[in-house]
Every structure is written in C-alpha cells, then in structure tokens.
Image (cartoon, rainbow, N blue to C red; front, side):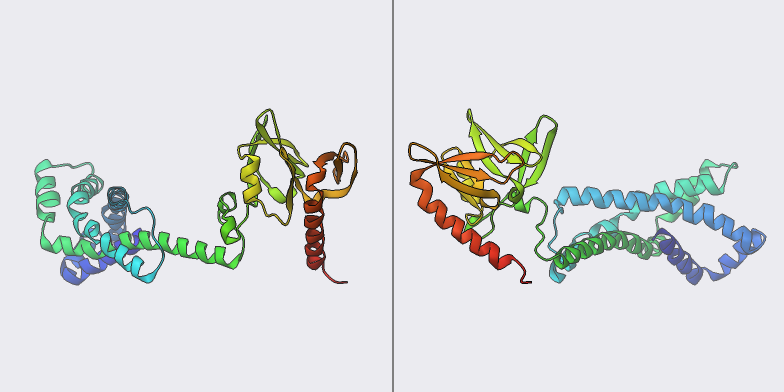
Length: 303
C-alpha cells in the first residue's frame, strides 16, 4: 500500500516536472543512482507519512466513537465520507515530519538549516505539493480502512456459512421466549474458569447456598441459581426433580420407589449416582421422560 502510494506520487511528479526529473537522473549518474535517491528521498520518508496518517485515523475514530459499523452499503459509504476530513487535513500535520526525515536522509552529512527550512518546509506548503500528496494519501488511508472492512465482511460471511453455530457468548445469554435456550455455562473450580456445554452436564444442584454443575470433568461452581437455570434450560432435556436439583434427562438410567413417598433416579454416570425425587413430581417426570424418549427416537438415524 505504501509502495503504491509512493509510485503514484512519483508518477505525478514525472507528469508535472518531466524535464526536472530527467535532470535529476543525469545528476545522480543514471537510473541506479536515481533509484537509490528515490529509496532515501521517497519510500523511507513516506513511512512516517503512513504512520502519522493511521494514527490520526485512530484518534479520529476514538473522538467520533466510530467503534462499530453495520456492514451495509449505505453505512459503509457514510463511514467513508466521515473519515474524508482526516485525509484532507493530514498533509498539514505530517508534512514537516516527513520533509525533515527526507532532508536528513538525502542531505547526509552536509546539513544546512537555511536550505532545510526554505526548501523542505516553506516551499512544500504549496497547493501543488498538497495536491501531489492528496491522491497517495487517499490511497494509503482508504486502502488501510477498506482492508479492515473487507476482513470484517469476510469474517461475517464465514460465520454465516457455519449456519447455526452461535456467536461468541451468544449461548451464554439465552432468550427462552424466542426459543433460544441456554447451551453453554461459565463455571469455576480450583484450577480456574472454563465454559461447559450444558448438555454434557449430569445435573445441577445447590448446597449451602452455593450452586454447582456436575460434569464428567468434575463438580464446578456456577453463578446462576437453580431458578434461573430452570427458566433458561431447554425443558425437553432438563427436569427439576426437587428444590435443589435439576437433572439432565439424557443421563437417566432408571427410576424406582424408595421409601416415605420418595423415588430414586439412577443416573448413567461412572459411579451410577442416584438422585431423590418426591412422589409429587413423579407424574410430571414420567411425562417429560416420555417426551424426551420420543424426541431421542426422532433424532436417531434409521438403519
């Protein structure tokens, strides 16, 4: 991008000062000498131009709070127009720095302050130099901005191609009223925090006013209460057996009467864990279990 801008600037220089450019080539002993001075006098100094321009764009984004852009043609066009003032005024800020670097590189070691100030500062603040710089500046500025936009567009297209895969943390903020149930949960243990798929959890429970998720990887503390989980989990897969426990129907092995009007639910876990359930919840549990079994059969591929 910088090289393209420099080449554009050089092309305009030849267009408006062809004979002067020929004399410069002769003065430096041919095309190789000219290319060397082009590197020192054009390409290297313009690196500072690009850095300053990008810094101005970043500052402008912060001031105008241009942090988020909905990628529609109209919004993109409006955004391009909003950053145009930066492109039009950047010359007055980067020019003295760029010209100073150019002077130090080209005139080394024969420095003359008077020549520097008159030829590299005063004489560069002209309409001709401004418009010679304008197109390279537009190329560098809009090139950088639109490269970033293109990357965002490609990323959105890639996400759309993945279909139903949730956006980052989308699954942590469910909306049951719209049919979007909780699919992942932030958990914590002694080793740190992680995120678990709720469908992999055996059950959720409370103990001494603390809430836990029981998972094949262990028992993890969670911040959500069981009331919150009951509202956010898919009721076709999860069932609240009692006040302090919500089980995953996917891991139910069997159930049977125990004593004093209570039932035991045996889970398909490595230790064949058991959970209690009062008789009052039995009929609803049966209904849920039947619905879950029907759903599971529907999802099983036919042989």
